[in-house]
Image 1 (cartoon, rainbow, N blue to C red):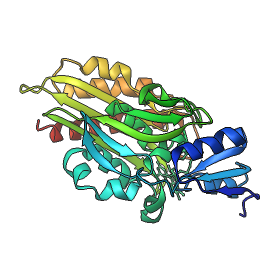
Image 2 (image 1 turned 180 degrees about the vertical axis):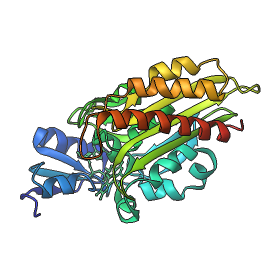
Image 3 (image 1 turned 90 degrees about the vertical axis):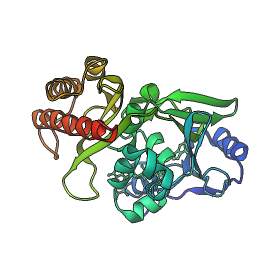
Image 4 (image 1 turned 180 degrees about the horizontal axis):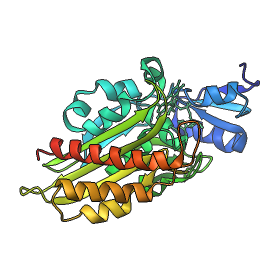
Length: 289
Ligand SMILES: Cc1cc2nc3c(=O)[nH]c(=O)nc-3n(C[C@H](O)[C@H](O)[C@H](O)COP(=O)(O)OP(=O)(O)OC[C@H]3O[C@@H](n4cnc5c(N)ncnc54)[C@H](O)[C@@H]3O)c2cc1C
């Protein structure tokens, strides 16, 4: 339970952190909340020679609406999302998501950026970011790259991030009126990773017809799964029981779960169907029905 030895570096600026990343290459890792990285090191599943602790870089912790986006800084903690009046008032899907991550101690340290950069398909935020059409801002030696969440996750624990890039901001489009979202998760016990979970974000017109919908699935594939068939099916349709049931089935068809200690693959597919139904119903209620 004791991690291997490492050098500890504490940059005060982003350029300084990037310099360290370039200097030490694949042997270096960014340390944010440490809630995924430190356990991995203790189990000796990760052995970075250099830890670059970015916690002393100022100006990276914020939640604000600006230029048509909700902008969340690269060092913003789960607990800050959980207690933000803006998130509570306007982004209930984010509140749903952050609240079901681990426990308060973990949420006091863990960052949204770390949750995404880690590339774990069992993490909760990736599917929510896919449903919301979020963008991930990666800052590297050549400046900023803006990466859509949809293509950010490459495979298990692998993202589009280059070794010398840092996630400095997450951007979520400000949602139009009559929008609603929900994240629904089944876990074996409180604080556990998802057996499966579903994020749904939608916008309807004044007749209740779906104008826009995003659906992301957690822990039923090597990356968060975008339930494209269900999204296409719902576009331009009413959110009635029959259409929601059909969309839920299409989402289950897109899921690619494996059988493991959380249950057999067929059970997880059935779970995705039911969780999609619940997420869509709740999202529609929140959109003002
Ligand atoms: C007991 C326990 C239960 C948990 N349960 C859940 C759960 O139910 N759902 C869930 O989603 N998560 C869960 N987690 C994971 C937790 O949410 C993670 O800590 C978090 O997702 C990672 O954020 P961090 O800031 O702690 O990242 P760190 O652990 O510091 O880093 C994780 C990885 O991301 C990289 N990284 C971190 N920040 C950046 C950045 N800004 N730019 C580039 N790379 C970066 C690091 O180099 C490292 O590879 C749990 C963790 C614990 C310990």
